[in-house]
Image 1: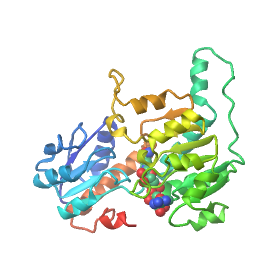
Image 2: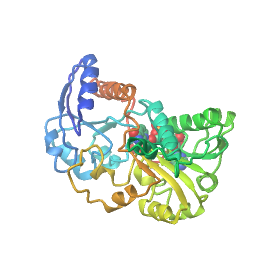
Image 3: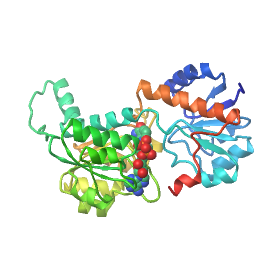
Length: 339
Ligand code: NAD
């Protein structure tokens, strides 16, 4: 077994716990760094052939060039999305990139449904009221999911589970948009339409496509103008799928009935850190928090024990594959940008 020195960025206690446990099967030399990877911290990786990064680590051309100078040959992402990596530059610098394509789609799909129910049935507001001995129900009227039209954009691993749950579990009418149709979803009555048609017909819209130039701001002012009044929007995929300024306008006009977000366009400046003693400078985010019908969590849809175990195991398998010169099963390359 070839031991790799791995610089692990943006680590939290749970990363150390699960990666250390999974490393028993590999014996790599893991060095945990708390700071996120960016141009200021990239020098920490000097001399490490492998770098392990997460969703908000920045792997742009500058950072990759710095990593290459320090001898890094592998970027092992401990996440599925790879929109934060400049893949063209990585290829040019001969840095391999691997990811964890599917660690637990159930973790994210279940959290998506949890957010939808919490928002639509006003559970956080009800919880806060009861803690204040306020047992009044005014303002807490929800809607049944049964019989409503749900739109799912992206029916890959996560979106397919969400579509299935909404269709079979709750009895929604489900419309879906994807570049490839899933015949198993069609068999249970999910109807594929164009993204524009799905957005226009949905009462509930949930986003599960990756962030690409094509899907960037897929929910923008124009889409919101075409949406049904009172649309409930859920995003557990990537923040920049939604134009946040347009979203705020939609909330102010009442066109959007409620929003549940686990991801946010500018989340890299906020999420995963305890900023409770600081003044948050992001006025857009602060405005979002003022709406009674907005529910935000800090990118935690993936955070289950099962998912963390699977992420750690696959990340270290990717490192071992690379170290042994085996085919990198979970490689990410520029060809996937055109897929
Ligand atoms: P996946 O690759 O299995 O599925 C993505 C689907 O989107 C595919 O079926 C693909 O064909 C489709 N798609 C691509 N371009 C599209 C377009 N223009 N319009 C419609 N559909 C399009 O990915 P997944 O595992 O289901 O993950 C989905 C996304 O969830 C990831 O890209 C990631 O950004 C996000 N995610 C978030 C968390 C979290 O903690 N919040 C965790 C894991 C993944």
